[in-house]
Figure 1 (tube, rainbow, N blue to C red):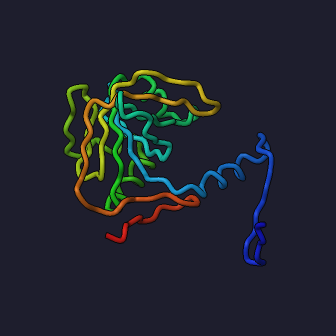
Figure 2 (cartoon, rainbow, N blue to C red; figure 1 turned 120 degrees about the vertical axis):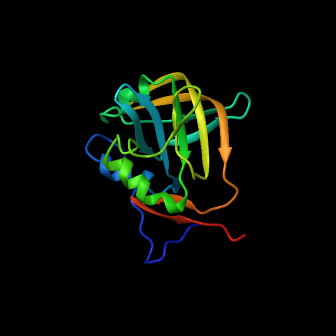
Figure 3 (cartoon, rainbow, N blue to C red; figure 1 turned 30 degrees about the vertical axis):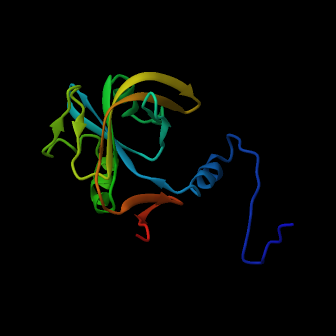
Length: 174
């Protein structure tokens, strides 16, 4: 039997169009990492911050992420055959905010392009260079499924995390 103390509160609700903020806050109780997804457009490299990223399969190697259909940036990623997902380190919070504010905030960075012309950001904890294989309509978002062509992992560093609408640092007790 679960007994609530006076300091604990819970709120149950049926999600609907009138309480999307409450649902968003509830989703925000799940701690996630922070990513920047990059692609090349005819106007130059574009980036978008996303925490809707997940591994899907090891064999074949697949990952997904989900841009909001209402985002002006989404169309660029829906049209991109190649893109890269960068898992940010704690020391990349400023870069995260810069990209959140400006889709083309990568223009002045010294970027490498992979074989598919996806812009690559250095110094991330992990990076997944992907080829888009499928898009799936999912309510107000689109799921973009990608085949992982190449993965890169940094040996150390603390993770940039997202919880309850705020960024913070996640570290382990090594």
